[in-house]
Length: 330
Image 1 (cartoon, rainbow, N blue to C red):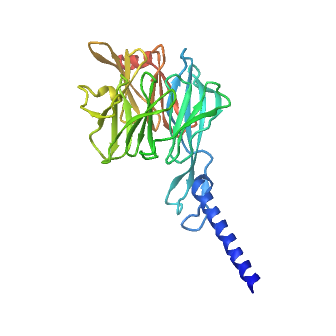
Image 2 (image 1 turned 180 degrees about the vertical axis):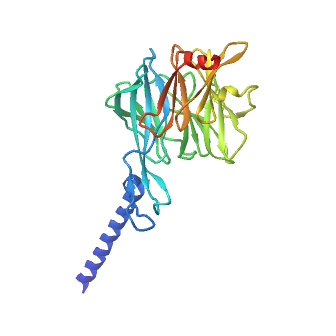
Image 3 (image 1 turned 30 degrees about the vertical axis):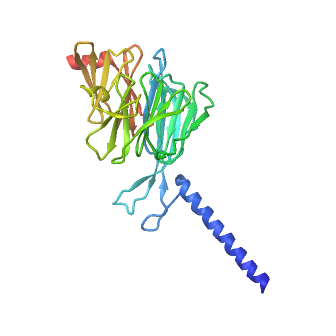
């Protein structure tokens, strides 16, 4: 009797352990889940959903572009032929080197990034590092100087006083400060050694988007659900009065500051020429991307690269500034 009772208890413990293990696999590896339809049929996972380029970087000579591409795999969860329901089944990140002249991908690299359903990425201003973070995942810094294979060089652990979910990653224009938007505010790190410097906390909002202007001492912090952004000093970590002009936080400047580009309506870009006295519009372009997420000028200001969400395999487009100007005058 005693041996039989021990055997039953052992069997129950084994079943409980198996159940816990199955739950952990199901929870932490969402891309492996294959749930059923409402009508009982198996869901189908597509090999490619859509692609997205959210951070891009020109080479010093402007002949190639480095782009971190997020590839979404979708799962068909449609309850019937008349109703369509697609959900994200997983994400894959790869780094691509694109030839600007031919607009062709010449190299693809595997990359070690944060894991999760919503991955935020940013290439450093010098093009040597790729930073990535996801919900409840530490910041991963990948060295891309050697290009292949990529490897993780460090993990910057978030300060314990702050929420662990990163919602935005930005470098200061001079490349010295790393700013992380979190659920509670913004954190500032030394971009060289990823040492925590200071931060700004605001409990009234949830999630943040952050953006530097042309200079590196002020960052704009946007809280989801709030109409008024906060402007925070990088040096003190305290909220300050908004600058006299806040337009620079909505545009992307060329390296020499002579041009800037402004995303309008999700899939259009206005290009402006800028000097100390005034700014005038060079022209407008309309992209066939689903939505534009980032723009970059080439070092010689002859080419504008546009990245965003695309239903095709290539989420990056290139435009000649001369052609944009001709469209305005024609």
